[in-house]
Length: 164
Image 1 (cartoon, helix red, strand yellow):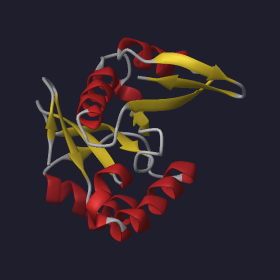
Image 2 (cartoon, rainbow, N blue to C red):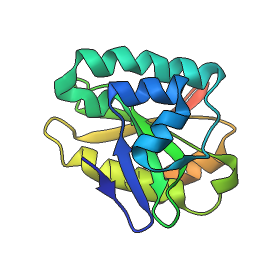
Image 3 (spheres, helix red, strand yellow):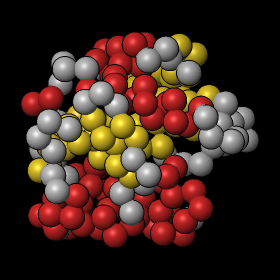
């Protein structure tokens, strides 16, 4: 399954492709015929992606909610970012989205385009009534992406929570 937008192909990674992304990015680039230029695969981000591998393997039926989706720019097959749903929909029909973009690709509308497409896909799925997201209080860029996609702030404590 691939979600297509005007400028991007959003490709969900299999568990094997997640392993390649975290340990052998050249083989992933070869397999997907792309060039990875998004967020660096290190630190906390690396730990998060590695943590999703087991979930992706153990819940094959719902793997699209556990994996990361790479955002490949159609014009040159460059991976500009990634996005994910952090788990299956909860009892309230909410699914949480997360996303990140390579620094060189900020302020081009790529993330707004990708988040909108992923939210449209999610809302069309059985059991999903809302997409939610969490941002840092001091991250207006991420908050603006959510606002442009129609999200509304519904809670603020140490972080800001949004709902579509």
